[in-house]
Image (cartoon, one colour):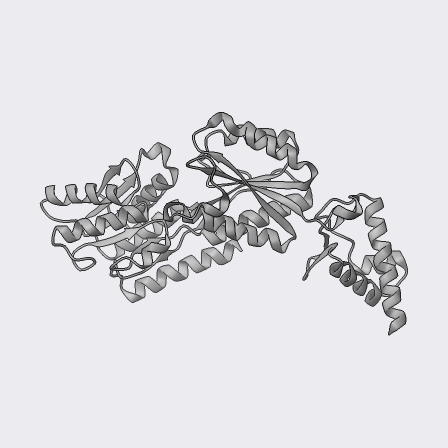
Amino acid sequence: MLKRVNIASQVANCIERDAEKERRPVGARLPSVRVLSKQLGVSSKSANEALKILEKRGLVELRPREGAFLKVNLNASTNSKRQLQQVGIVWASRSSGRTLESLYSEAERWSSQVIRSAEEALNKAAYHSVSLSIESGLSARASGILDRVDQLGDNLAGIITFDWSGSREMLSDLDSRNIPWVTINPKDLRSVYNFVEADNLFGGRRLGKCLALMNIKRVVVLSSGPLNEHVSGMEKVLGLYNGYLEAGVCPSGVEQVICPDCEEEDGYRLALSYLKKSARPPEVIFATGDLLAVGAIRACRECGLNVPEDVGVVGATGLQLAQYVSPPLTVLLQPTEMMGRHAGNMLIEMMREGVRRIVGRRIPSPIIFRESLCVPDELRLEIEQQYEREAAALN
């Protein structure tokens, strides 16, 4: 037994030296156990134990059914060899001087959840994350991010960024620096590569079909606008119409009210104005943001309407507060956890394989049914099962 451990240690040292000589990059796949045993003239058991020794040293990540991957740069100095490479997460904040840790307001919570999930995936693959923030609206400030990128140098393995004004200029510069990147929710509908986004079109379609099958014809949509600046909201509304058509129902009873912003007061004010002017209330109010929906619930109460008995209300973000509203809010959920995980895994794949383009992924959006909308159990189960099939196909 002692002899086998000595052989395994020697084999581990040999593998480490060979990887260093060949200048394998971080994330490179090592030869399989079978190939290593043949190359080094040892048993498969010794080769396998050698990889486990390298894993304990923090040099290798063993992934079941996939193989062994380098976690650190073996060509770096001894002091830095154990350091983990970093992935920059670019955050466009609403005001300068705000750090990643401080951005947890309800309106921004979904972005925080995407980041947390991406960080979990990156940490499992031995990558640290570092926050690179920029004040939103400053289109020319991509240079500030790039200065930080250049400071990080070889320690920066890749970038995850949300789409913001000036980000496309930055992405072009990242390409010129040969740094892989992934964007979250790109505003350009023509995007094909390097993105992860919620599939709001099919999510809205799922909701529209649900309402149509419930024979709900009068729907008011509170849309944060202008629509050309709120792509996700536009997709939710288009999906809603498509869902009605798919169910064979004309969506002529669907009306839109454009909201200048997406706060509670906007939803309250505009829903209240609509309800007071309307001869009869809608059967459902669908808001493209949860905060708009919360405001709409208050407006319904002030007009003497009960939710969901008189008017059903549906949000479309999935903020934490939605489950604590009275009544708890049904939402078309933004799948933040799955979005972050896929963004992290896509970037890991790009870094390991040395590619700079990978086909983007649209993550299906589930409907979370709560008390603000009455849906028959059979129909609810059907919609939930449809989502589960879509999510399983993506994974």
